[in-house]
Image (cartoon, rainbow, N blue to C red; front, side, top):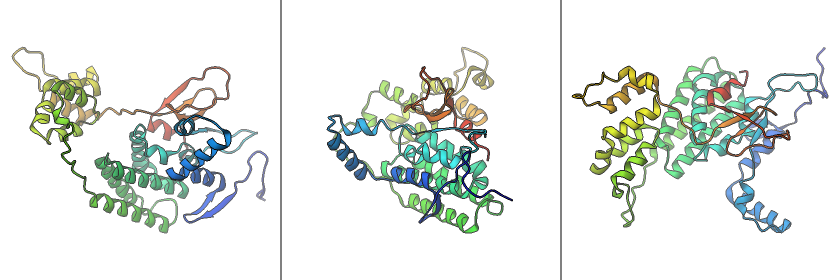
Length: 336
């Protein structure tokens, strides 16, 4: 006969019914805090400052918040509960991370891996969280006018994933149809968006910078498509983006020596190396190097998953060491 009740090793969860369905009480409380708008957060912070009579700035208090979760990969006699992907997405504030320019690329890569490989096998709660994060990313892209192309590719990936998992997904057909409606609505929202042209206000433009400054800027851009798009805007930028020295630096940044030597011709003083062509061939075979300003990491002492830039309150007394997690490594921690 199955045991129905609260075991001291595996306490039951309290559930609450919301507009989106039933959710765990503890995760719902965290999501309420994450969904507070900036005005509400500013008001709460101001009241806290008045009550405690602190003189520090509001940004100092809000920046102290650390998003982390203690990862439990196996069951013991003391604890049977395992860390789920849905709980990790909420505790790590993936919705807020999607609005952070330092963590947006990491979240985008994570969403791409989930949509391409794991969306049909996710629970209903995890599926709703994924599409909430996706909607937050699209709204932020429209608001800041950044990463519009990346959002279109991500929505296309989501549409393909919904079509592929239409007949063998976890969850109800109604929920799956709701995901499709969300993707179509966001796609229409992006298609109606038109980037505003900057008014001629007399201030400095990008093509007004010296050529040396432009070379440094373009060499720091990780995606070569952005470099090529910038070169199509004016003759000045096109001249800089077509320089062999710029593409040589991009080749050395994205690929190692063995990969470059695969397409590099034999050294000959009479031949000028076409570094742009070498970059395209290397990119086609080996792909682009993934670069992230901030990444997730797991503490080797307390097994706490956290954002590397924010840190976490380690339970140990000594200085903790962390292992950086790529998006693929983070997903491999969870048994789906």
